[in-house]
Structures are given as C-alpha cells and as structure tokens.
Amino acid sequence: MPCWGDPEYTFSDVERAIQQEVRKRNFLARYQLRVAEAERAREMERSAVWKPNIVLPPIERTMPRDNR
View 1: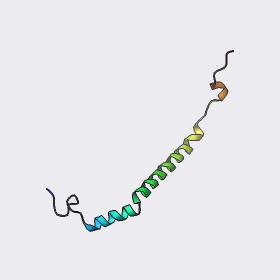
View 2: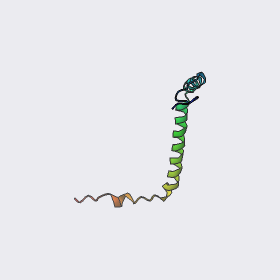
View 3: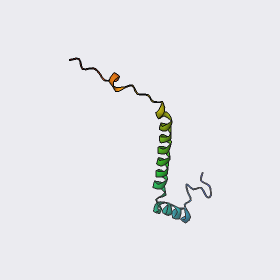
View 4: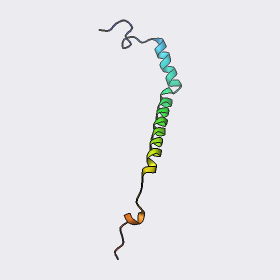
C-alpha cells in the first residue's frame, strides 16, 4: 500500500528539474567515462605487476623445424 511521499507515486518539480540538469550536463556519460578510466588504470597496474614475471621461450625452440 503506497504511503505519503513514496517516490513511486510522488514526483515533484524539483526531481524533474534535477533530472533535466543531469541530462543537460551529460553526467551519466561523464561518470561512465570515469569508471572506464579507473578500470583501465587498474588493469594497467595489474599488468605492470605481472608483466615482469612472464617468461617467453626463445622463438627458435617454439618454431617447428623445416624437414626438407
């Protein structure tokens, strides 16, 4: 049962104005960009930690010999 002030049933002009301002200033896209940048920075940090530990075998040993 809805009660007084329940946001599901109450929508004010202030809420509408805030939503318009959020859209106008493109806050959602800016927030998503910040999240993506933070995730990228974390991944770069992780790869910097793990990268020195990766040892690749020499190419000569991994390539098949030509048996002519």
